[in-house]
Image (cartoon, rainbow, N blue to C red; front, side, top):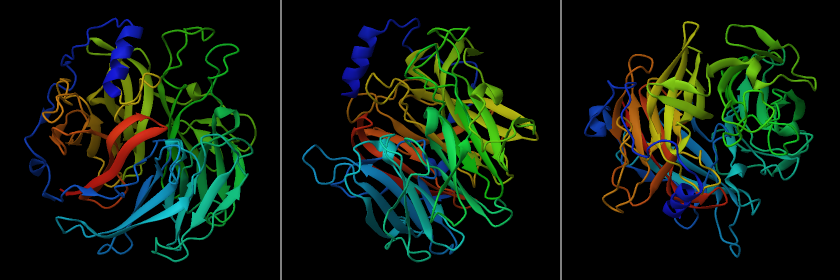
Length: 498
């Protein structure tokens, strides 16, 4: 179906540039080594976490989609969650499943024990309903999830015991969002709520915009806090715009950092923002602290997030503007892949753009704040899109590691350095593979190694839960992904030590 979608795309759209991928001057010092051993001290086998008979997937606007409880470093515990796929007659269709595993990082097979817990039964066949996790200060696990805007409830469960992923409280449904809700992003801030601690939970809700909830009792109950952004409608009387796509990362103390777009990348504007056109889906940054929204230099851009008024993303710090040239190619239709907080408390992450508005040629960029300056560097060729033609900006995605900010993991259907399509010897087709990259100069240059090669199916949407310096655990979806309501993917992963 993936190949049929691309063929149809070529018929419907007249591309203004060649479909051949040419190496740019940017990233010219990047290189690929022969195997992962040249970038790591050791690594485990690729393991499977999900059940064979339960295909599962996640979207990427919920965080944290996976966590590692490392309070006992000798026995870390991994948790992640998916929306399970089933056809119309299946009793598992739209289940919200949580998978857990005990990790033995010293072993070639790092999973010593694992299990599955059904958080919700047949909620919605849509990967936008995937759950997000957090470890509470008392060691209990918190998980929240929602439907894809179909109702107004945030759903919450809490583990009954500290460090125990096997038994959970019953689901609590709260209508605190005050409107349809999509995505949840819970982060504990120890200095919030007058030093008593508070959970921030970023959501998409009222106005299809970024809003947030708070909990002063560690997730037992929720209260609506306010609207973070008010994205401008892309053009007058448009019914499907005005929705900035936002990713959040908490620092554990008082700040929540966020990346944002103007809108969905398929929605573009003219220069005057009064009709459809070829401009303006850029990427921006800001942070939230004590109920206010700030630019990176500390300038306040909204002094009261608790009211109904909010600023558009254009008031935030601009990271990379739509229509910026890199080499000979113009970057279009930005989207956000990942954001984390590095050990130095600075935000960093990965964003993506189409080159020359070509949906078969996306590019990843690594962005990192250091010494008050944003370093924005070409990271890798991302390749084509993974889904059907309605979502030409669904790339394989990329992830950063909060504990190891010089390490990234990407899914790409092209050689990350040259842009040449990755044709699998197993299928004779272009497939998405997982690569690990390392830098020592804030992302100016990268060395890459393939984790997968010549695969029989795609390897998609990597995520890296925060763990510890010198070790990464990367998870990804392996299989076929026609669209967000139909997928045949299992969850696999690998442990890598540097």
